[in-house]
Length: 355
Image 1 (cartoon, rainbow, N blue to C red):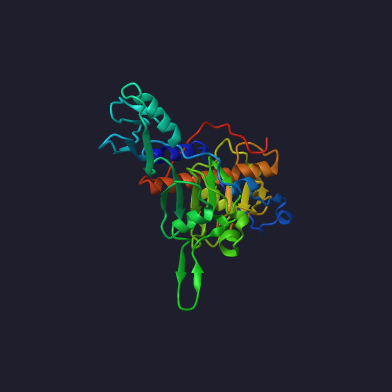
Image 2: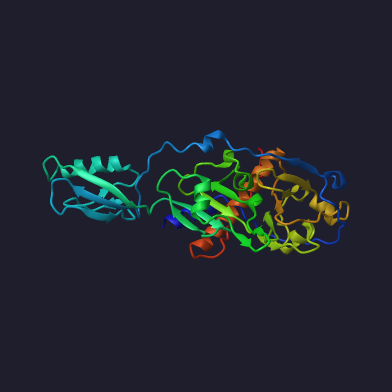
């Protein structure tokens, strides 16, 4: 249930729109605003120092946690219990006590208070045996992808190590990194944290070693992948294999074409690492009409078709990156939970970032 709730939270932030339009014929240009008459911006996203500090919040109990309870001075009272889906436990004479969201000390005080109705001056001991309510997701090109219990403060480096490190291919001559660290990310409550995995794992830059929180989602894509991503106001938002002649025009066409609501003069291409991304805005209508050159795509490019013009280019970039990481997280999380790719539809009318 916890995994389903997390996926539902991720999916809630996505916007997939429907429609179709044809595209024919265009010239091809290099990825350059000077050659295509487009607007371009490169942004450096930095880690806030607060992310490198552990959360001051104490561990709270929830459904699935296994605890051990004992009434001190009472023989054979030690009992192992699993907190139920409703957050309640049933111990001794108590009909059901809701301890969901309480710390262990708070749960101890509540049990003693409730037991006073039946026992004189009860003293209770509670210990945590296993965690079943709070998890950190580590998926993708790591040694042991999976969902790991969040038992206490954990850094990103510790989580990646717990998952077996990033995937590598070793030979007698060399070791090849199979993980694409430039596009690895951490999602927290629907937002991508500006962590540079390459600086952390390859250069030992501990300024990137943030502390994680329960439900954080870590994803390391494969370095062997040559995919591009098409999101926004297209009929079939999706990832696509990059061919030798894949362009903006062909990628949008392969995604079913733009919807009727699409704002075609502000189609964005995001390229580069997620910590130093470059956004370039092209006029799709002009490309279709042969008035502007088409743009060839590269591995991991993100093509985003909006339903309204952007107002602030950096805000538009934030909207695109948020859509990208949440879409990938929702799909990968669904696969990890035994499901299939997530399909999401929301009402048309979302506007581009930076308002």
